[in-house]
Image (cartoon, rainbow, N blue to C red; front, side, top):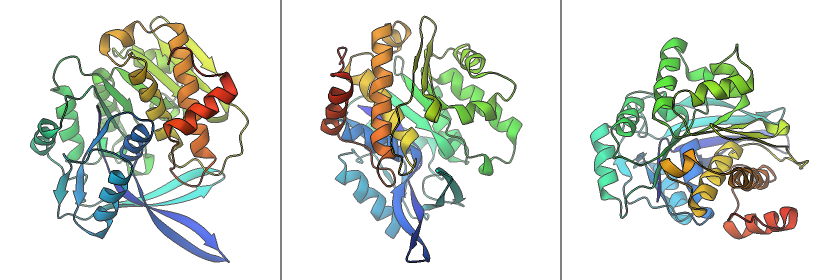
Length: 323
């Protein structure tokens, strides 16, 4: 079971209907999107967060359940739900967040640990990322859980930086470094690399991340394709030409696709990640990229099911031999 820790929020998506500018509320949040995408890919997925008892929290819980995510360890909170207003500008999502004293950011270390102990099976991986690792006190609570986790449980980390929320860059960079040191997999966008390592090339930045002890660093670069970096392997998969509707949830779906392939192919362990072979690395990139492509061809965060993804992989690549 892959266990996701992080935010669950309501995205208010900008829509223009008959010249009326509206915002439509939809369930969102990078970690929650990844958890749902994993479940749709037939990977056992559990989500742990503080979820409000308000009307928006009920919407989030319903959305998770409808997508097969285990929410037995979710922590009910009387605090309000985090709200994010999103607008697509030149094909890129821009956000404004409202998260003061919200349910997801107010979760404590003891609440998370109690939730983990309630899970039906031991976590095979922790997935973390985005604003839940920036907003206190929840950020420190998640970091403490990850730092003190039981041996041999890998961590997969997507920084997914929202620069508008960063008030102290130096402090946040120190937290990112600490998170890299705890991570076995880092999935990171080229935009995040530029923010964290403005003086380094993509390749040099990936190498810097590996030096923290990370086994696998995968860099997504939009239309430029995706890159795999590990101690023994460097691979590149060019992007295919597709008709993009929007990019909301694309990175989260890619992250889920990456973890799903590693889980389903038997490579999601600390030892095997260190020794993954070239064929598996390439197929992991194909699997994750195709999942993200399907999401981009739909409105909002709407990842594919396993059958949808497998059909596209078969039509495009003839299937994947390592899966």
